[in-house]
Length: 87
Image 1: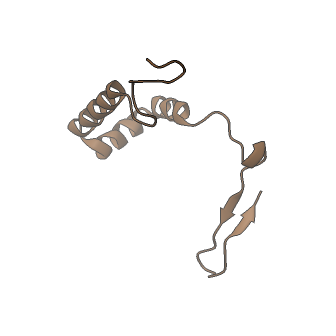
Image 2: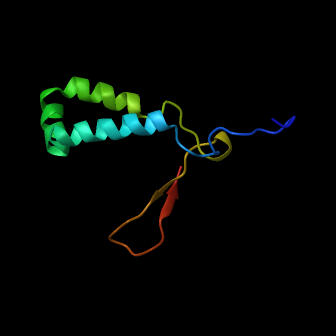
């Protein structure tokens, strides 16, 4: 290996093969168990468990540009004007 230069390894931005394999397996099982309709039935019967899982998927910290508030664009579908920005 040349001093100070990285050689070999994954290319920047490429995904880990194990992560991709596990994700593909989870998706295959999801579809094998009935996909979205089955998940909806399970979520209705197990609301607390569903919302606990959902809460873990939501990012914990939110911030907008430079750490400020997140700008939210609200578009009124009944008026054809540009979106208004709310903070």
